[in-house]
Length: 215
Length: 148
Image (cartoon, each protein chain N blue to C red):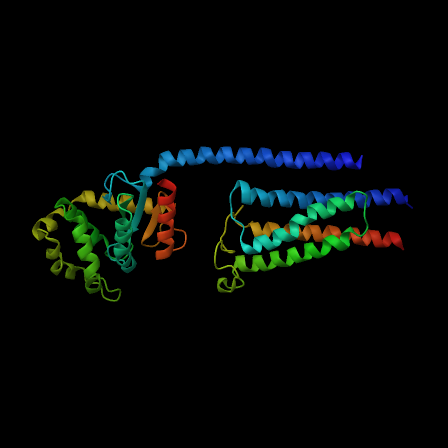
């Protein structure tokens, strides 16, 4: 009798485990399939600026703020990684202008995009950042003396900055940042996977693991 | 005065019930690691080391019923309980994170589940070990009362 109770309980518990596992796996697959379809646009919008090969299989999404020091520090690092893995990484920039007044610089960037000088302008911004983005005394106007280095038509920039479409872009990006739980910049996602602990090495490893998985 | 046979039957049932709890806990732990694919951290492993053998030890104690089973099972359960208690302190931040022994690999304070806003995996572990210890002590008391 006792043996039967014991054996029966074993069977029931193991059976429950197997059934629950199968059910859980099935639900997960359903959910992730759904996420893959619906979520992709949260990471990459049509307006988003991209860099790198269109055939690249590793999508590096960066939520950034032109006035954020760490974003500036990461910029050469990301470029170096892209250089080391030619054609494999595509960088997608999203805006998360969390610093006070940072939207001003996003507007300049978007205006520069119309002149085809997006990356040059971003580079100039990051390099001159210490002069205008001091936390104690931010002086956004000081950016203008550096912008000619990017080869921009400044009068045109001042016009294009007023485009209300840029405000929409910023709103959309901030909404997506909220959805994806980005609270600090830079916020990195590699093929939709968030950088769980922040750091150069961690970003490098996450990108490398995706490259290994995809190639 | 109940018959000795009835008494031992009841003891057997208590031990059997403890075994059921231990087995459910073990399967639950395996569910977290293998099905939900949460990597167990170092502290989780120490608790598992204390928990998993109990499935076998208690089962052996059931057939035939062995009065000594508590002596073999209780130390493991207490060791598991203490690890779980420490883990809960880490998890809730009472012990600062810098002091955790597992800075590499899986963090012992990374929260995987948060059922109903307060139930965490280490809490389930502590709860499980508490029930197991309580049942084993209860069984021990019954057995020693019987012997007098």
